[in-house]
Length: 190
Image (cartoon, rainbow, N blue to C red):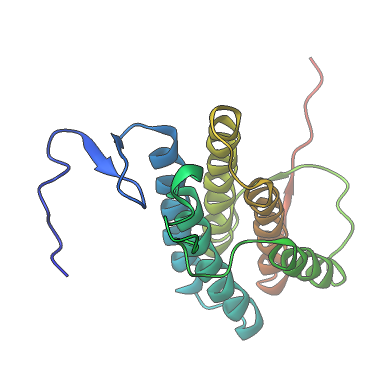
């Protein structure tokens, strides 16, 4: 597999199925942001975290590759002329979303009740979770904009929304495990 093809040198690229689009197209922005998110999740995994969280993040990284492939495939290219599906991979669906919800619930069971917004930070690993959460929210916003222009699976939108919640709760769990005090945001009165 050759790394450079020179086909994108003039600012366009191919979607899955061969359609050429500008590199600033919403589809490229959406799956490019998902790729950025996936890289930050890898950075979280590179930290000293518990095995259960590490394994969950590996599963999430795999699902983000699937999600990226779904975003890279325009609806008109999903099916080949012979009627077979172009993407011969599992799709992001309700079971992927339920996995995130179950992980959120499991982590929340061990955490103190949240009474205020929390300022990101306190430890590098926790900060990486918050950065990943913010990138996830951006991926969600771009995907929503794409969905308004072209049809994409609503499971993608739900998954990204739930994943940002997961990353927030993971940051709280890691703060708790590392015995880092969460700094509450308490607005000062004017």
